[in-house]
Amino acid sequence: MSERSETPTHFIRQIIDRDLAEGKHGGRVVTRFPPEPNGYLHIGHAKSICLNFGVAEQYGGACNLRFDDTNPEKESDEYVNSIRNDVEWLGGRWDGQVRFASDYFDTIHECALALIRAGHAYVDSQSPEQIAANRGNFTTPGTDSPYRDRGVDENLALFADMRAGTLDEGQAVLRARIDMASPNMNLRDPVLYRIRRARHHHTGDTWCIYPMYDFTHPISDAIEGITHSLCTLEFEAHRPLYDWVLDTLTGLVDFPSRPRQYEFARLNLNYTLTSKRKLKQLVDEGHVSGWDDPRMPTISGLRRRGYTPASIWRFCDMVGVARADSVVDVAMLEAAIRDDLNQHAPRAMCVLRPLKLVIENWPAGQVEQLEAPMHPQNEAMGTRQIPMSGEVFIDREDFLEEANKKFKRLVLGDRVRLRYGYVVRATDVIRDAQGEIVEVRCTYDPDTLGKNPENDEGQGKLRGVIHWVSAAQGVPCEVRLYDRLFTSASPEREEDGVASCLNPASLTVLEGAMAEPSLAVAPVESRFQFEREGYFCVDRDSRPDRPVFNLTVGLRESF
Image (tube, rainbow, N blue to C red; front, side, top):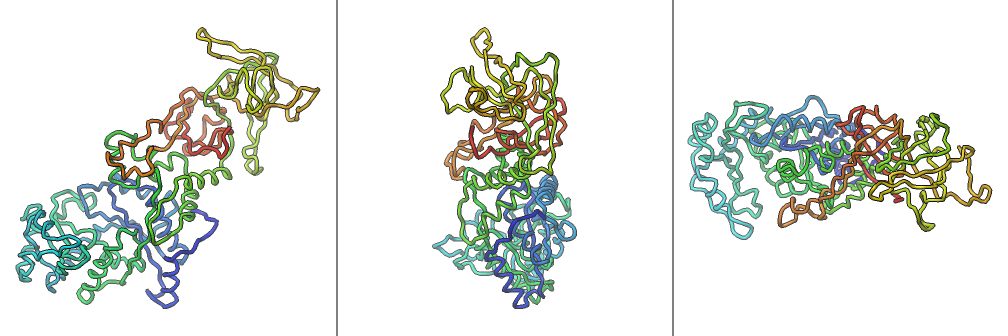
């Protein structure tokens, strides 16, 4: 599990503390993380992962990874594998084998038969449209199905026909017999089973009927001995049905435990989309390069962008666990990764928009190895060698022919220090046919390595310190600068759809950047602070002859 500086208390932990004090569940704490494999996990799921696996770890309990795979048309092994990888990367260590709700289809089917035999469920032959129309609304009670009072034997026979595949999709469903006048719409004879002629990613063609989530969820929890079933707040209205299923099956079916459901507020971030369906739309319509596009709020996208498990855990701890929904500023997530990388990311130099700087008095052919720390506050990380020659690249934004005193970079006729190197003075510029500056000429002072030359011989203070890369030894690279994917703080609420508020400047590709030579062999997912630029991560598209870096997050300061 990822290291965290603190373990914040919240109402879920207070509930568990109370249950343990009262001796409930035999002193056990068993949770579960039950995603549906119909898309990649996003940052909202991270909160649930951290909560479920976190409390299990804190109390010496167990957390199961269970796939809620009851919707065969939308689920696939690709999503299963991505979710497993994301949970494992975040530090979630599930108990035993990965579980699937479909592993319990036989038991769930037996539970359905038990409800039919006890008179608590019936086969409804109304069309889906009729069922929806007769359900009523929040001010009007529902209308009983004309098939609600079918006898047990007829219901069993029809349910067997559903199971055998002799009925078509939409021709029949199995419904619970509860209360069509209930103020809770979820209790108005909810559908428990429907016919789906679709191949299932895990069970193949074994089944042509599939249980609904609200029926599967409590039974799966009970089978696994879950003690605390932690759900996001939208499931609060479903809890009475959760309880009805388990209470009604008591005495009809034996389960290892009687779990309880508790709801917490989901994670809502501004400028961020946390809907798998809408994220899939962005992928399918080609607005992003895939589920792991670094602009996506998916776990795999954040990972590719350079976020760390520790930063995501820290962010979730900062957000906390509450009962009421709220919107969190995405800047909090950015602050979490910035703080993490500031402590742990080695430093390097990369010039994003190169401008050649020619040192006219540099000895011909000389290459000098300069020593620089890997991290300014962490000596244990060691040092690195940076080659310097008579031609280096500086950032185009670090030079002006004329500037006021607020410009702390190189100005014609004035001096700066090359980071970890010598002091140089700009003497001239070379222009192309269009009048653009393509080269800056300068001289260097060989006595200034490691020294502070300010006010030396009346030359005045240095304007500042700028980063650079040797022109001969530097490595050409591609740098991808990322901004927010959406221009709207609430993309899900946009009337014209999420695609209408996509940020056209969310990705800028710099193909002519130059990096320190050591970065050519940096492993994928290595993270660095490019000094004076921001934090970057090595992308999976990298090659030794052309590394690719993704901007993770900018520095606090702007230069």
